[in-house]
Image 1 (cartoon, rainbow, N blue to C red):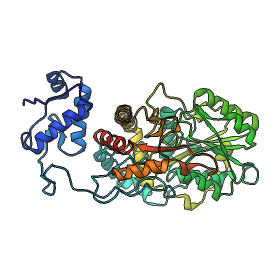
Image 2: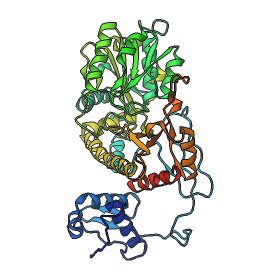
Image 3: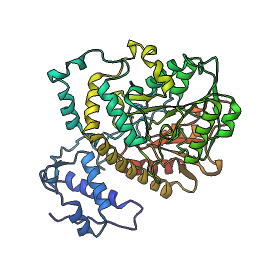
Image 4: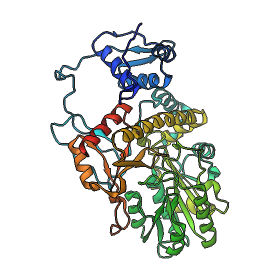
Length: 487
């Protein structure tokens, strides 16, 4: 098969997007018929005189959008194309309603709806993940094994602390992936980060860290869902300023609090990564004050710049860190699986303090994920998704540099699945105006001001852009629209 796309290296459009658009047109126009095999990445890259990267990215986009399928020993094969007769003369799809907001907490405000009559919405939602590469067939097989006679106990209520085999697998996985050092008996399984935080709060109420004994220090901007849980349990929140390398430890000392909640791997919402030096200072604070740290590592698997920084819990030698991990980013939020690696003082009271109503994490899902981890599939999947998300991040940052700099700058892209976008030097439209203008261009971006713990403090005029669920082509188009809307 001879493919002769015209790729222009001088074009502002990335090579992979040019190649993707060319191949898509060939399929839609019938010049690449159903069952046609695409050349291998190596052969097409050599034929075009380009590196493999743009060819791989173009192929992955075609695969994600269903134009081609991957077959064993056959490579990529064109799927039968069904023309959309509702398309207009220019080939553009009809307007579609905006996607529902899939963020993890209903307490977060939604961006304004996209006005009717606009082009298809591009939603930079920051709670979404890319399911294109999820191993559905493997997961189905592992789940099916749970229905064998020897696993009938999985259909009962289960252990409130979590299934024993799953906790053992979690202990091994957390050590390999995040340097968390915790035996299975000190791990408690939850049904999502909010549930794990609620469990920890109930344990804290029975210790010297009860609400009447200390304030709960928190990052000055944080998840509103977590803040609501802490307040629900009676804690007074003490917001601590953020510095470029994480929490202001001096201000933490001054607060007098003996509890602190942090997101060191990728601060929410500002995206900063706590430096190793600041992590050691925080552990020193705990040792000197008798304090306890709650570490929320909600997307710690995805770090893109430099060497991985170990979890706070892995650096802790004094039992002063309660670590919370989740699979909502690494796998999918629908499984509702999280875990808390507890310090000895909290683990000792967990069995008596947690109740039967804590059996919210399905034993079937626990067993399936246990097999997924012990079979080595989890590490392979995370490596693959780290590469996928790194390409998407590069596409986003590249588009921002090309379209929006120097008026706007992106930050917080060293880890995680979202970045912060703000006007350079504080000039330009405010947060609300940026969101409104984006909505008029059929793009959804999200506020940061709502996450301030103390609303009286000045807000950063910035918006959040999540990139997890978007294709690289959608990212490029979304930033192009933002550049037009924010001129």
